[in-house]
Image (cartoon, rainbow over all chains, first blue to last red; front, side):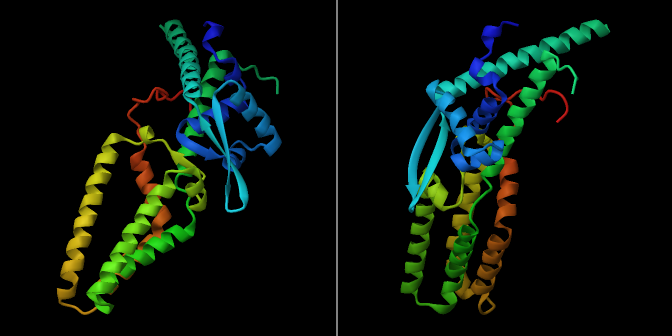
Length: 105
Length: 175
């Protein structure tokens, strides 16, 4: 397996979880993502900043009434990175399954 | 823990985690503030009960108000601020929804519109008094009380399991 197939940013399980949460949605509230991954706001902010600096996640800030809100969205680059990462993970699993089948026969 | 995790096992675990997170995000689309179901339940009741109580002029105003309400709801659904006001933390991407479900939903919406149109025309001539009020109360109460369950049932039909998405594939290991 070529290590270059993996996205180094997504090798971190927390960042992978954040990107996986965002891949099926157009946007998600920061608070909901924080609850879903079970992190503190500061810890999530740090991970989101890393993803944002790589262009994987877009952060929008605004107000609902007088309350500030933050929304996260996966960019096209982030989606493509996750697709490549998933394909690399699948190849590992499939190669392992084929190797196991060869051993059994 | 001294258990050694082999790379294939770790990869399978990562794939399962990705799927679980996607399911979690899809399930979040069921979240909505209770007041939304209440408003729509009351609106449906008002629409169907109107012929029993108010004049034709007032009925057309009620119909207009419901159309505007539906339009505002759709606009709110499509942007994050509106979604937040509705109590929705996320909005599911359209390509996550099965094309078959979209076609079915469009047919159902047309059917409901036709039934509502015919219903408001035929209800004043119904054989029993206050038929519209009773039907409106039943439909409105169902929406208010079971709206979340109906949404969950629709979601289970809506999300594509056809494996055509670039992230869709086999399931690895036990779930």
